[in-house]
Length: 137
Length: 137
Image 1: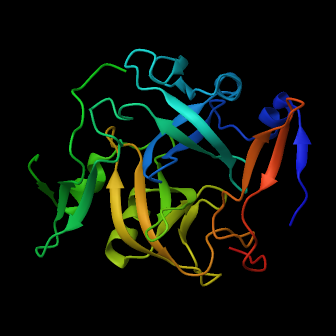
Image 2 (image 1 turned 30 degrees about the horizontal axis):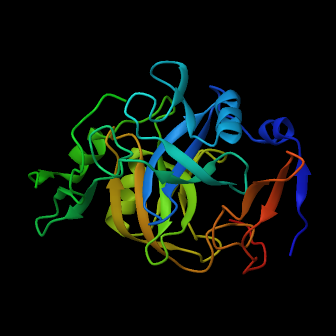
C-alpha cells in the first residue's frame, strides 16, 4: 500500500489543478445508493468552505459567487468523503443528500436517459420519478 | 410519467450544451458496481462515435483529437446507458469496463481520498489497490 501524504488544507487545495476559470469540477455521488446526483464546480474558496463546514459549497458559474447547496431549498449535502482523481483536476464527493439534488425535483439531475429505437432514432426517456415540487436553488 | 421525446442522433447531439471549447463533460460509472471511474470530455463527433460504435470515445484535450478509450491499452469501455442532466450540459455514461479505467493501473481514477487528521491536516489516503501495471493510454 502506498504511503499516506499529509498536507495542510491550503496545501491540499493548492495542489489541485483548476481550469481556465479557476474552477475544478466535482462529481457528487449519494454515499448510500452510489447514484450520481450532479456535477458542479468549485473554486479554491468554495472547496475550503466545503472542507471546514462539511456542507457542499460550490461556485455558481451563472451567478459568479459561492453557493452553499441547499441554502434556499434546504436540500443540503453533507459531505462524507472527498476523493480526487489521478490528474488532480476532478473531485468526487460522497454526500448524504437532504431532500433532492435537482432543482427540478428529482433525486438526481440525471433523470433522463437515451435509448436507441428500432428506427435508429434517440428516445429521451425519463428514468426517475419526480419526488419534490420544483424549487428555486 | 413524462412523455418520451424522439430525436435523430444529430438532433440529440445538437440539443446538448457544450462549453467554450466545444466539449461536454462525461462522468463514467461502472454499470455493475456504480463506482465512478473517471471524467472525460466529448466533442459532438466523439459522442456520435460513442453512440454508433458502443465504445466510449472522448476528445483528448491534451492531444486535441478523438480518443477511443482503450485503443492502446485494450481497456475499452462498452457503453450500456447514456444519461444527461437537467441542464443538458453534462453526460453520465454507464459502462462495462474492460481491465482498468485509470492509466495508473487502478480500476477507477479516483483512487485517493482525503481524511482530516486530528491535527487538522489533510491526509491523502490511497483507497484502492493497483490492479494493473501502468500502461500508456
